[in-house]
Length: 250
Image (cartoon, rainbow, N blue to C red):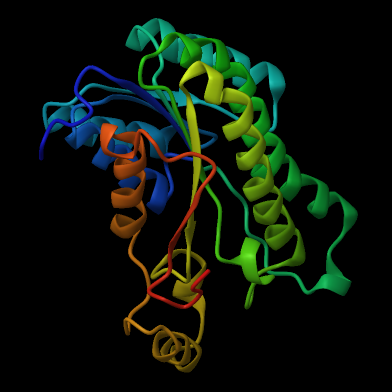
């Protein structure tokens, strides 16, 4: 631990899931005060309690990123409780696995609402506070699927993550004059989560396809987020950092 983020405040959406939890713990370990936004408040509170038990500062927030009113309210609470906002991590996401021809319109709309519109709403609500920060950062959790069209994920997931990469570039250009950076982290196939239910043979074939010989861990994504949130990445914006073991090399 280097305390590289000491004195900064971060809001992480989807913080109750495996990756969101790892990001929240990693940011807190570097000294950031963190607000954990999550539709499953109990999951967020569990992670926040773990951070507080380790001596960090954390609050849990009930937050549906697809609700403009809910996002506005959650950002307001985070800013009030933490004394400002320096870092926004747009991590909340859904990943149904229906085949293209089987995707209902309602499911398509819900995935886009959470994965893409949610990042737009959170970024818009956080913007006034990030502009006031000397260390304003937006970090969007995209996916290898947004670059390749995906392997086993749904078309709506791939489309939403490709859209997020595009939105990230707009944010980077729009916010650069205010000293706020915007970057994506695009993870490859991960251990746990949706892959936990896949057949062992499928998982082993995927593992063998990764040049570095393993699937990703939540800690791999969290480390990339910490880097992009730090001063070491102050001159990086509009970028997509691939965290996929070499599966895709841009």
